[in-house]
Image (cartoon, rainbow, N blue to C red; front, side, top):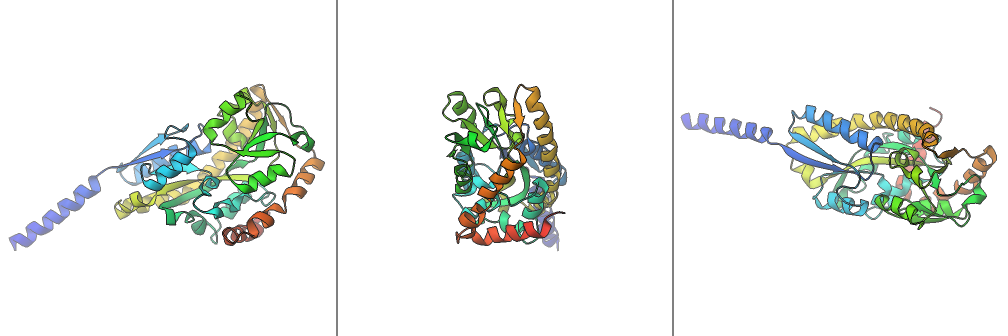
Length: 331
């Protein structure tokens, strides 16, 4: 009887000790003071409270943990527990991460967000890299595409011959080609030096990212084309997750369920702020004329079906997102 009681007591003590253990979660990204950064801060606070401080999130902005390829590798191998990034940088692990890049598919930032978080899409999209040991926690629409350039771009004709930094997807390279520009994939941390050296003429990204990174000091001209929207998300090392007590693992995903909606609102607010601040910082923001925007959309709209819909490795996810976009349009 005594031995049974001692065994039970030992089990309780062991469980208590396990629950008291703390777990380090290094969360890296390459930007600063944008929706990715704010999302990391809010997530840190919420997960800390939900786990009683058992999971300690450490935040590393501005590529402190390495370039994008290194951080993708780090979260895959487990040297880094968390990476916040546009999913397009994971195309080397699964080409289907390109699916949200289709131009002229979404009406607005919120429309892309609703589509990616639609019940038919969300879990499948977040699981696209699970075979490589990476699990998505949440995603949101981080901003509309814009081009910052060293010399003015005021019309579609001004793109001709320009070298523009893009994300690492064929879709975005093809998009730039429709206006006569060359898309140059490049790690984000290398963009500002490349602009300063005049190795590239501009960068296609979101003003929400380019503003806090002070791109206006070199590439002060914004062409606010908004032909597509750039999502981002939180990606976690699967082995690390599996090693957590189940209640802590559950807390991470429960917090994740609310973080997408929280972060997209922050992203929209920061975008609006920087569209105003860009001019105050000495830059200029050009909105395309109605005719130019219509012509741009006419050129790029077929690219989704051509590059994504016909690729068997991308098509299933692309069709799910396209159907979700149709279902959520105008809402």
